[in-house]
Amino acid sequence: MSQHHSDLIPENERIGQPKQLFWIWFALNIGIMGLVYGGIIVSYGLNFVQSVIAAFLGAASFALIGYLSLPGKLGHAPTFVLSRAAFGSKGNLIPAVLAWICLIGWLSIGNVPTGIFSINAIVTALGFEVTTTVQLIGLIGLAIAIMALSLVNQETLVKVQTIFTYIFGALTVVVLGILVPQTDWSALVNMPNGDWVGGVLPAISIIIAGSALSWAMVASDYSSYQSPQSSNKSIFVTTTLASAIPLFVIMFLGILMNATNPELVNAADPIAALALQMPKWMVIPYFITALGGIIPPAVISLRSGRNALEATNIKISDRTSIIFHGAIMVLLPAYVLFISGDFLGSFQLFLGIVGIGLAAWTAVFIADYVILRKKQGYDPDIISGNKNVSVNKGNVAIWFVSVIIGLLFTTNGIVPAPFAKGIFEGNSLGVLLTFAVGLVLSWIYSSTQLKKHTDNQ
Image (cartoon, rainbow, N blue to C red; front, side, top):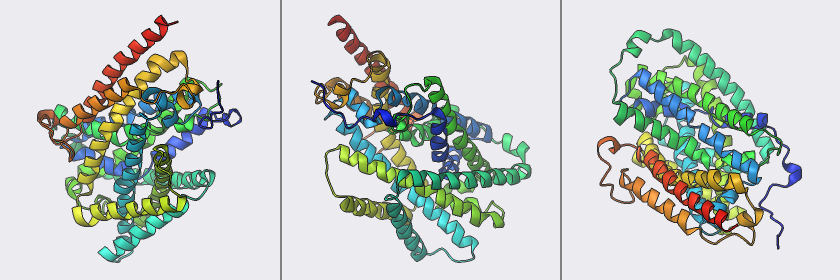
């Protein structure tokens, strides 16, 4: 007997159009993190042309998000509700915990330190000294702002983010207009080539891990509100272009700045170093806007992280949750800023390790959708009702096997990595290997499941 499924989006709320997805994904990908990604790409020893190619292909990986938006429309439910079809109700706790780690880790190791670096740039531009005390005050203030805004309704948050998106986008175009004519393009294009296999591929993989794979776990959250009449092609194209275009433009700016000033990639504070290349009159408005643009995605990460934590059946009050996550937002960035002192290194290590888990989950989710759900649909009783199996042992096993293989080929702090040598040494190329292995295994497994289902009919 069927039951009411509170996890599904009500029919009266499924009225969205593809154009609404454009502004959501555009706003989420035009932030200052693209400048950091540009620096990461250059840090692999690539020349300008190779760096641009890596940025283009990395941004193009958002086609994955475009495609992963389609299950949301089909099943009219958020990503982690749909994920139960592939993993089972309890097996789905694995990606839920992983999502919490990724979202809160991204917030604490990526967003918040970048926000502090933006504050540093503003303080320096105002003529004051950046001290540890100033950074601590900025860190605590930023954490409080993020926690406070997490209580604001989603509609208000999106409106605020849209305003900052327009301003930041306009200022970025101005910066490009200033830097491009001043660039010695002949010298830039003739820089020595980097290693195509050992440099370009790992650079692409780290961008994919930090962008497309990191957003894969929420891809269907937004599309689940799409009208059943919305075109799949329009959803795919709109989401892909809205994500890839702004990210590529910002990364291009970051590459341009870092390629003309290579020592920036080793700077403890890459954002403040980048500010030195801008006209002084632009630094304050640019980084104030960048700071404002960082906060809404950080709030979204905090909210989604709390939702993922709830999906693990760990029930805590809103007050306790905010205090708990607030402490993480202060302690982890404090470690990165004041103890480790290696922002890019810590950030890349985090992306590489979490990216492996996400790559394995994404591979399983895609195979399950393509082979089974596109043909059978998402039965509400399978994803949140009395037909839902506890653990889909096949897909859970594939997830573990793929993750272990990825870790063996990626230097990490969890298990020894005896195969992290050659082209896999010192990079996150193991993320792409994890995805490939997981996709092949889960494709075979889902195909056998389809055959069994067909034979039993």
